[in-house]
Length: 520
Ligand SMILES: Cc1cc2nc3c(=O)[nH]c(=O)nc-3n(C[C@H](O)[C@H](O)[C@H](O)COP(=O)(O)OP(=O)(O)OC[C@H]3O[C@@H](n4cnc5c(N)ncnc54)[C@H](O)[C@@H]3O)c2cc1C
Image (cartoon, rainbow, N blue to C red):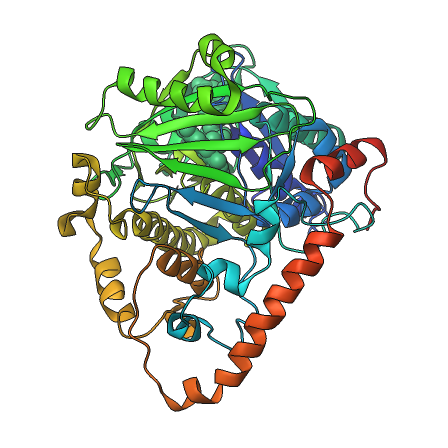
């Protein structure tokens, strides 16, 4: 096989670069057919810093870390990580203290019973998420999703992580270079060199010469050096749907050493964006994401500092200098072109609501690792599938994020009015919303088995935000009525039991630091 893919070059050493290196190296260190390993080399600029944010993950990160061969205990100890069980939204609907949740656990018996129409028919019902999963009761009390005796990566209730992005990239670098055989070059890529057939043949660096490869992975962040600058694959702005384009990030100390650590991301809507609040063991990561068309940087800073004052006091607010990060919401038109594939910010970024960026990196690296083209001759087939799949994922992200804005009843500022205007809602989402007025989303609404957001997630946002579906009292609805009452009762009982059994988030994290989890 003359055109065998045997050397992969990754350019960029942020979370995207190192996660991709880890997932691919873990799978391809020994190519069983050819008995030759695939060589992986990562080039990282010593001068261009990583973006340094990206602190919320999805539950998929547990599988990814396991696949890479990292111990969960080491990960928690070294990345200042904590457990995340979902997101808690405040003021998104009315600006006057309303709340709803998007937990990671799907509703009880979701495979068999659609509880949404039954919940809609209840009078005096608890919030939708509280009625169908015990998880929201746990994060209301800052509890952990497992116990110290639960083995690594296993759970009592589904969970993901909050982490320190800088420490995470550093742990991945060490693990990839020391355990997985990934070569690491610190140099600036200054030129891309083209082969006769139009592929990338090599990249020229400022201090390590020319580096050749068969497949190039562009993880250079928003610059998109290979796919964007070299191949000129157009960027598709999604600003017509989602307006946020600036973030102000700040780290905030806890007021007391043993202050409880939130086990969900807090998302508090503002007049032209929203503030995230993420609890790590040693600090809180906060930030204001907003639309620069709707508010000035001074106003956005004032709102963030006010928030910090509320959670950490005047001194904390006075000492914080938020870091401004600007981004264009959107993605490349295609992601894999010739022998180059972009992963992470170089492929696109919308905004951090629902923390969907790192999961896209995991999916991208996973697909490349699983469907690695053995030769250049078949690469275009994998590339075509990859482009179709990831375009679908991006569209789903846009629709799902927009759901939070489109359903809001807020009209207190032009930002919310513009966000609710029908012209800013993607057509497919508008269609679905129309349909969901007559029946709640369930399994029929899933487009593919690997849909990024399960239909359970749509239910959590729709009914959390007060969307009304007119219940149709069909045969199957009537048949499942008794079952539904029993499930609501069971869920409430499980919530009570788990609240007694599970430790606090901080308590468990302290124990992990001291004793570690059982290894699987
Ligand atoms: C405000 C904000 C909040 C976010 N929150 C979340 C979140 O909660 N959850 C989530 O999943 N994601 C989040 N993200 C996204 C997340 O931060 C990124 O997806 C993730 O960090 C991956 O970034 P990256 O590795 O693609 O890019 P970067 O971190 O920017 O890394 C780029 C790399 O390329 C290298 N490089 C650049 N030019 C060259 C060159 N010429 N030669 C060699 N190397 C070069 C740099 O040195 C660097 O190593 C957030 C993003 C923003 C903006």
